[in-house]
Figure (tube, rainbow, N blue to C red):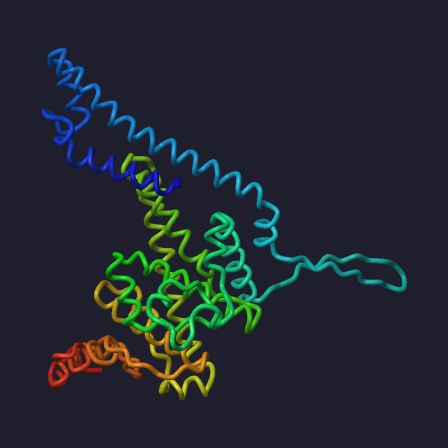
Length: 367
């Protein structure tokens, strides 16, 4: 409800901010309106005052909603304070050393390895942000056992709307594009949450440790950062731009980490590696830091190989993906190509460049 109110308040504010002529005939800003009010007629002043009231009401509605959301979030944090504290506090190991002459008590702090520390941080982050999500949403996206909703014969709509499962649901490139493009990438947000939560739960089941913050810890810091930072920037409140930049950095680092984990999954088991036809990890993680469209290249390859990994883990038969196999061959290439290799081999770019020859005569594209 708060999100809906804030969204509509933002839309009204943006309309008034960027198109003031629709409500204020002579002016282009609130300051100009104030100046002109002093020189307008009584009738004009009355009309403009009423429109200023609408403008002020939109701002007050946004501010009150933000304050209410902050208050509710604070109360939730206070209610969950013990759990949050336990999640972030490293365990202490108490040992008693007994000497024949004297009793000595030593408190030794458990020295966790870096792997354990990362796992503890990721689990604490996931639980913290999960506590901020309302229960009906948590219940719907709760990770289910494999084939609770999706089987090898499930249709596209079932796969698009299914909650996460363990092992994860194979979502090929064509399905991901089908859900993302018509919804303006809104479904891709759900995809991002689902794959992160599926990997999180899969790692917990297999090793008892995690290397990612899960769907809650990866997606919701970004969402909250944008929802809070964007209105702060519009209202010229300090810290707004920092929140937006921090949210972007968080989701970007999460994407780099996702590529790293997909690489590890694809080659950790020789049977899976052979089934996928790989001889090396398929992705370069740092490509996530490249500008568009190069970051999209590695992003689509991540979608493809993660989907293939879950397909193999579930024992499903291989299925054709016209997007990855025919239209954009680079997506399903088994080889991990470099930037130079990608640019000098146009036959892997698109379906209409398959007959093009390699650009081996360009010096700066040579290895």
